[in-house]
Length: 368
Image 1 (cartoon, one colour):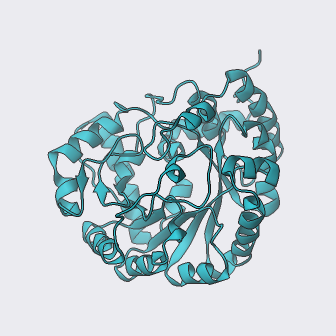
Image 2: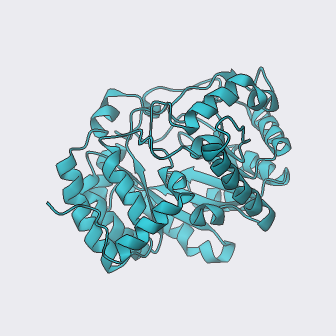
């Protein structure tokens, strides 16, 4: 579970995460209906966004009646009582909410030690950067969808977004040692930018930042749109052509780059979005709370309850939640590919495959 354990602060919480993965093995091999309570909260502060990405649909409508500051703080209180060890603040673009640092600070005050922010960094100027760090954020994912303005701005739909994102990301990287920050650069692989993946890898190495690859999908709740469906269809020939160059870079210098096992998952994703041979730990680890208070489901399946009506503890203990998450674990689902690296991280076989690749006995793209 390597990198994922590093994202959790404190030995007690890391021990709980290790126990969680142990229970996942029991669930897979011995007790398929074993209910394992979530440890991480995915908090969609807002569904609204300040960019217009062709791989996403959240910006196409304006979401109203989102949880208030007081309601979000109440949710955080409930999460702390549930034993949640990490809070991921996401969106949309969470920094669109002026109260985002206040809610994050409340999570820290409640004893949630690991606070994470997903952002496009457009709004992550000095004032907001200082505010979220003061609130306790020590982990960031920054979305960059191209190695230059030409690719990134076309995908993100706003001219000048690349320059602004890279400037704010660079400022964040300049202080990561000072505050002990964990920063990743997220690149969503899709039809319009897959050929830029090798240059993204080189950019990550120049910036000395871990590169994580999201995989375009139209199965998840913020991504169901006709344009996204087009971006989610990538021809095998184009995937293999790109991955041949990717493999060459990876063999030359793997620093800051995805693992072989993760890239092999990418190769299959665009023709087999479910990949049922890999159980979904992501769906078990995370409790999703949406911007209007909806709770339950996962990335590919809609929520079934609302925290405005039912306490979180009752939702998680309900038969519906338990039954749904038993199905999600065995991938009786629509499929999505979300956080596939977590699903790979607890599989010993994936590390064996990495070793076989390093010793030349595996190839990312089989010889024709």
